[in-house]
Amino acid sequence: MRLNLSNIVVLLLIFVSCEDVIDLKLPPMKQDVYVVSGLITNELDFVTVSVTQISKHTGVNVPVSHAIVFIESESMGNGEGVMQRIDFVEDSLNPGMYVSDRRVRAVINRNYTLNVHIDTMHITASAYMEPITNMLPVSYYKVASEEGIFALSDEQWSEEQAMWKFSLNWDFNHTCDTCKAQMFAYSLQSVDVAQLLSTKKQKVVFPLSTQIIREKYSLTKEHAEYVRGLLLETQWNGGYFDEQPANVPSNFSHGVLGYWGACMVLRDTSVVQ
Image (cartoon, rainbow, N blue to C red; front, side):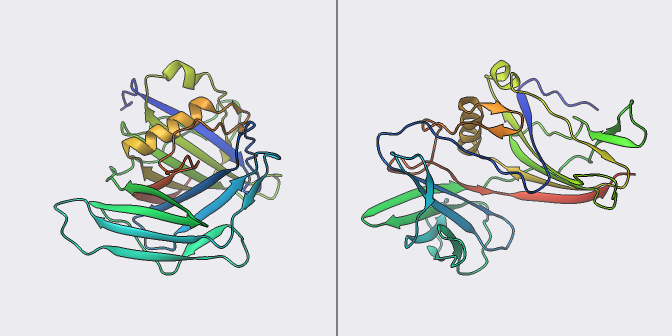
């Protein structure tokens, strides 16, 4: 059954091979700007937070070391429950990358506040996690012009706001130059359908026996607004962001760019047959 996607915009952002790099170029700024980003999920794992600074003179994004980074979590209900704190340590091999000192998972009905202290500045952002529905079966179709070649179809999107990641691997086929691809998709409720759909569309094709790993991430209303703002304000061209404007919504204090999110994630693995 085909879903009614009249209020959902699905954008596929494709990166062929895992070695491609997104080059973010920002417009001139009046002062140095910090950029902080991180994500906590329902999976028990280490959490990573990136802290960088963009120079107003050069526009170069450089890592910020020696920051104090920690998460505080508390109940979103009637105030009961113990406040929990998770501290982060800077990765000695990757300046500006901070990793939680233990594995942690997000749960429903708790608020997670990321704290970043840089000199005298105290930067904060809060996030909460919403549940997400199960994924529909993976769906793909045979490309008519090619024998044994397939592409992903539109039959698998849900009618809720979500972020998707597809990892495709056909490296068993030694005749291809690039045997892996990553695809990011966003299903967003938006009144800006025409503007969003004006972006270029791409399609990745793959052979029989390709392994497909799908990941589906929940998006809160605020997180979806950030993604929608990023997509609307960013020039999308051939699989790369050309610009990262400063007026994209952010949930950080002090005008800091980036986003701190909490997502429920589901994943599955299938093989094209």
